[in-house]
Length: 273
Figure 1 (cartoon, rainbow, N blue to C red):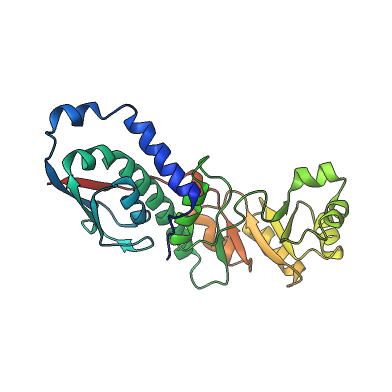
Figure 2 (cartoon, rainbow, N blue to C red; figure 1 turned 60 degrees about the vertical axis):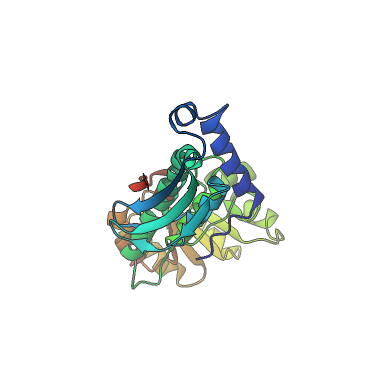
């Protein structure tokens, strides 16, 4: 997949990450390593994973030569080389932790997303990510989820309407909420909590429904009742172990916050020669 690092948000977050770590200077490296020493650093996968973030390395190791042997979205196994960085030894040592923090975190998200995608393989259902992201890293984390095969849900509160139960309560009901969003000009989805709300939403012309915290058996029954009149997303505690059962209900989408909020950082090594 294309992993575009030119967006100002991404450029800025890399600058902030470097500044956070380096501060007034890398004391250990500057004291231990003579100026002018050159080195080569090899980034290696230490487990099976879906790699993401390789394209960030030239931003982190500015002034070095970065050879990207892999690109974001590539599946790797233990021992596979990800990239080679050549340049001043001080630059390699100073950027090492920031580079690993980004790649281990983002690759962990992509690896978990890919596992969810494999879990529903062969069904019509697709995996969605959510807004449950690390503050300041949403764009990168959603790019990582997409690299793993998930479909990006809305980026934020500004690019789609998602009417949830608290919105329904505050608006005065399902009909009132849908009426006020009829001319939004963006996709509109509504969460329904009861069969009465479901029928009211369908009667009001809802085309995208969110069914939350149902069992697979309940979801299958509700989806049969909907009978193709709206696109259906299921959410609420869906795990890798249960994803297949939910996908087989006939849902169009499963959304999982775990893909971004609970992904484990994968094991990647940066070995300097």
